[in-house]
Amino acid sequence: MRLYELTEATKEVTKLLDEGVPLEQLEETLKELDCDFQEKANNILFAIANIKAEEEMIDNEIKRLAGKKKTKANQINSLRGYLLSNMEELKSGKIDNGVMSASVRKGSPSLLINDESLIPDEYKVIKTTVQADKKGLLKALKELGEGEKIEGAEIVAGKNTLTIK
Image 1 (cartoon, rainbow, N blue to C red):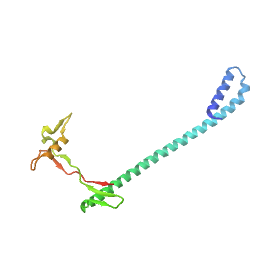
Image 2 (cartoon, rainbow, N blue to C red):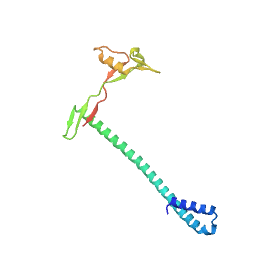
Image 3 (cartoon, rainbow, N blue to C red):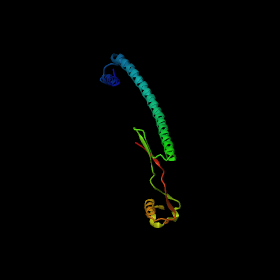
Image 4 (cartoon, rainbow, N blue to C red):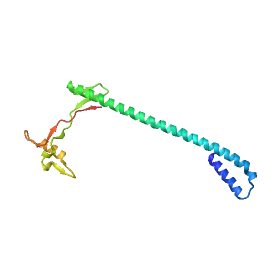
């Protein structure tokens, strides 16, 4: 009998007792139902304990695999950096083996703010705090002629990246 069936049977016996059926007639049935219920309930408790242990094992496996994933990502980044630095040193723009190719791509220009207090107000965006308008500054610096500059900012070469296809 399933647990819910045992519960229903126990309720039926209790109902019969409430209706006046003598306890002596139902005593053996109640004992059997109680023993069966206890056995089923204990089995459920063991099942819960086993499932909880499996859940903890899964959590530990997730943590282990997350660590392994991070290690692999670090290995990839390290190898990409290693290949990029060697390709830059040898001035090798592209490598192609027929299956994959790797090329050195020039980094896009980025803005380096040396001293934000020296940047003219027209290149600042007013927020809760005052900061330089990096997009406006970058555009203005690109448009300036040779020898012209804006105090407090300059264009620097971005970091090169490796493209693998």
